[in-house]
Length: 236
Image 1 (cartoon, rainbow, N blue to C red):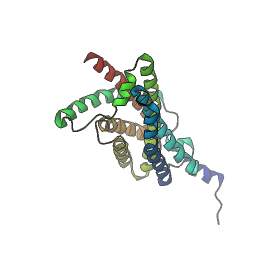
Image 2: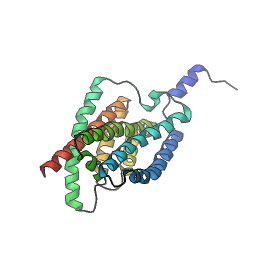
Image 3: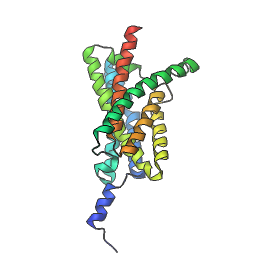
Image 4: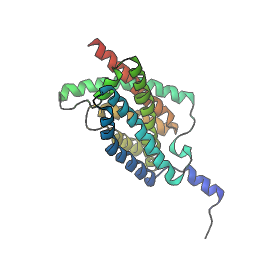
């Protein structure tokens, strides 16, 4: 029997995550998503703003919990999940594409609503309730929905899922992870921006070999999208 060398162990630790990591992340994400929303709704006790804040926090924590479950399976290095340094060029690209994602999402949603009418609902009204509950509540919502959720979902869906699927080719990895990410938001209007953000973040993750450009896209999209929604509501 040939014993693995330290070099072999290092190579294994640097290898992309695989199906065990995907399974651990999926079970953790789905389990918490099933168990926690009713509990948080009860905690909010009819307070719409608090409910929106708790659900926004849950969105981010679900992602980090799923990533954590995947990480501990085989203790791979951070770089195996794309958590590695990247140049400012990629981060600036993420910033620009995050702004573009907000504009494109708004345009596509307008078209979808025109075609479907009320057939698809917006499930994120509670987030908007929290954002409308005053300056402090808006600031907190930008942290929870923008920063925490944007980062948490990228660690789970791009860090684990996209990286794990790259063994089957970049196109499949980006396509499948984008669709799963979008469907995880439900068959509703939230699916539109999720598809757009997921596709952009997936391409950036594969091209840069880092999740950070996708995190920037996601954080900018969620934060700017929240602000735009409030501006449009105020103007209406």
